[in-house]
Image: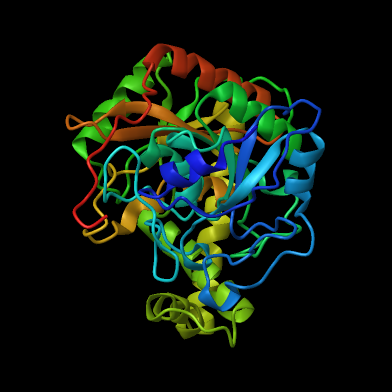
Length: 395
């Protein structure tokens, strides 16, 4: 039996779930016994499918998204819908309509986003795994900020049916979990999963326009040392900030067209306006940046076996602080290249906040990607469950 009263009470200070399904039950199959939460932009039959938008608050999904149907068929209990960034655009999860999600490792801190509810719910043990969506890093960023594991499948390997889209050329539905075994079990059910090994020393980027926090850099250096052989350092043609901006413009253009006529917050409306404001020459330049980056990242991974990077250049931050602009500078590369990527815990700041590292691999080498992640995980031993946190005044 699932104790929904206890889940409601544990969720209250976090606001990770926006709705629970008290009819949820386990089935039979490879995921039997697992409880799974679903980000609110992925359809769950009979449940709110609001995508973080007030305009969709009362919309109920008529049927399960393909990924959710696969989870049910595999025996998992789908226990509810998870809070998220409005329309999945942003990496803070301070939703103006459904409220902020709090990081289980630090009261009043951001869990990252846009799958902030997914990361917080998994880290706090409210569910065994969760589905999120990743357009520029929105699974891996909350995985890093919440100290858990997150996997973005190759874009072409997972169904987007039943997804309220951000940009279908970049979007991927994927899982978060507290251990690699659970992460891999869920990933195999919902997405294509090849067992090719990773061959080569790997590569990492020469930092190009990204200011990395010293504690993040120290944790990343430890991850590189854990590889044994040093990875090859490579450079891309464009600074990561320019690449991330080009990706953002593409998302803003797609979302502005998709949400045309839908009432949004002032913040989201301002972000969406960036896309249509770019003239044709500017957008042509943005597309060139994305195309070149896609080709370069794929070539690096093909030549060197994999690409290893910090997940996020900054540690978790307070909701009261501005959202760091560079959070997706590293994660966006896997989306632009359409490749699978996995974030795992890599270390901790001096004051106890989690730091992540990510690996980008070739499509078809998901088994090799998970094998390398297990090696790093066993060496770094950086996963820690959240400790009880004092709640902010007035909570």
